[in-house]
Image (tube, rainbow, N blue to C red):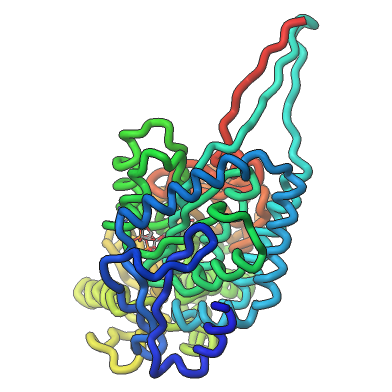
Length: 488
Ligand code: NAD
């Protein structure tokens, strides 16, 4: 089977590029694409796999398979669906190391980081497997004359489209609720990181999920993703990726107004450091927020604003903390692709041009010889209206600036078209609320970062997205609601 093949392949991957196959109606299919997209190992720069560029016809057959499966899957009991989800969670758990190794080879992240994300993928399935068993719905009696209640039904076939930064975790964050709430799906992972979706397809096969409930097609955005989004039989789209793509998807979906849309988009997240902090703890939290997964997490805090009274000390301590604790290879992985490496490099060239100071890091060579490695880079002296401070770089690069008081801190934090996440570092309890409630971001982490509870609303404000996911918020994405009035 594929898991075994993938396992064996691990020992020989340097000489045998793997060819991925779509998974439709519980079958691996090898003949539904125009051509292959080469996939490279970011840590070495070597080719190791070919990802099929699926045709619109292949997308169509996957959607039809999902549509046929919806007829029965949408009528299964919650207990039945829960069992399938638990089986999938257990199978991923059993193959934890295989998933983690492949995620690391495919994405560039460290093995340690990959293991965390595999565990979180398991949690996605186990969380929604139990959530659906404990759902509540509201019933109201109106003046004793009418009983009113909400009735929900699964919305239909969904397109689930994910990016390359946390491939397995983000794809399963969509698949788990989609199946739990009775919908069927065609999932399309990023063409840059498709490997763990292939392993997931094998897990789905072994879990004996009914045919067509989850189909996985590989391919790029322009051909495969776009065909999926525009398909009339796709009733909803859950998308995570860049803001420009989100805008395109919203346009493409507009012709079919019934499509449910959940768009989780890019960020340029601020970290605010006030002068009452415990400096050691604040440095460690800001460091994690900036450089975890080499800065390739949409929630990373890539612009740090420090109160002027502690600015110099913070910069010094932060820089020495990063150079001691965030070593390339052991803690910081390679960036995902050559294209992305060069995009990050272009921002570093801009920093040089704008006479910023590199407290740590330097400009990497244009064509790296072995893998896409960029040292953690700390910039100071960058104008707050510079593109470096305003645009998402999505790599191991952070810029630090200063502020005088609370009002200026809030202004700087909000002076950005994005509004995904933020970190607020202060020991003043009143300020936590006073400032926290004014930051224009879907997530405000106070003295912490990346704390998640899967029932809380996840999603951005402003250009960072439309719609929330998590617990009951995911239910809103994947179900239709009708209100019934029963007069007595
Ligand atoms: P991307 O937008 O380029 O691609 C994301 C996915 O969309 C890929 O699978 C791609 O093939 C597909 N796609 C591209 N064009 C499409 C189209 N026209 N129609 C349908 N599908 C299309 O993003 P990326 O470069 O893979 O990922 C990085 C971005 O993702 C960053 O901006 C990051 O902030 C964002 N992100 C957001 C979150 C969040 O939860 N808000 C989480 C992770 C990443």
